[in-house]
Length: 374
Ligand SMILES: Cc1ncc(COP(=O)(O)O)c(C=O)c1O
Image 1 (cartoon, rainbow, N blue to C red):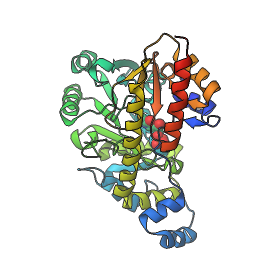
Image 2 (image 1 turned 30 degrees about the vertical axis):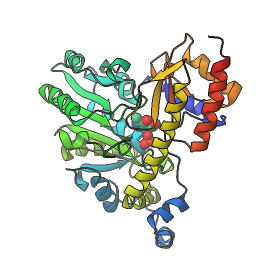
Image 3 (image 1 turned 90 degrees about the vertical axis):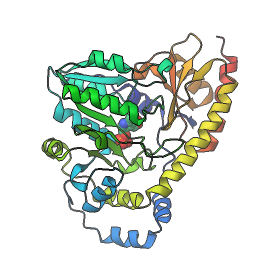
């Protein structure tokens, strides 16, 4: 099976370990194991549990405790609606692999995480792109979505909050998308890996799994919970679909790691404390970014409402990859060029890293932009 290169992942693989200021990072500054156990107030108990843990495959669908805690992130999901996966990346892949067959029609927003359109395309689906535009606040246009949906639409893929734009669909808009999907009988996959990082108001917005009988939510410990190294994600979906997904999962997962699941359960048992820490980091950094942008005539943005990333529009004529490579070489600052996310003319910036890294990186980038002959 041929598949397109995963632009953003290849970019990160190539450069993220060589930069000084990682402004491409999307995970909220990661926790150490010690920090996690202290936040949860269970250091001694956890050490004893882990030392005694027998490293078998463990619970195949995910431990009962963890699945109950994950279900607690939703209004209407029980443990029977949850299966653990290798990150949200594994969750998305499993959902698409289970649902999509050659000739199916799939709709995906763009920009988004590339899995949502490149995997269906590789499986032989006809993929239709629903563009998210700055003039709409990077939200889907419902007339455009309706014009793309047919009776053959198998799956609609959305991403809420959106990576890279940080846009957030409210309940009214989600409901309209659900109505459209329902009219076509389509499944609706919402990648909710940044859920819990709404900047103002309720941190955890409405999940598609709670809104629609064919709604599928994918999530993980990586972003909101600052634990990407656990490589632990999940799918929340109707049991009838999970039964099919499990048949695929037997071929590529067996089970997730017992230590990972244990630590994920520790984190979710103090989810409010971790989510509050994450929210404080991203909202503080976003204020710094916004103030910095005020003095930057060569860049503009639609201010993100959620998540950890913003999509900066380049108000000058240059290939985004050329700009990013020059910036990295001259200053050590890493961004992601829009071209690797199929949106030339933009730069993705992550504002989830250590505040000092964000401040210093922006300062270096400002000096570089001022000298740029454009
Ligand atoms: C929208 C989106 N979905 C999924 C993933 C994969 O996350 P995980 O670390 O949970 O596999 C990412 C990572 O950047 C992402 O941005």
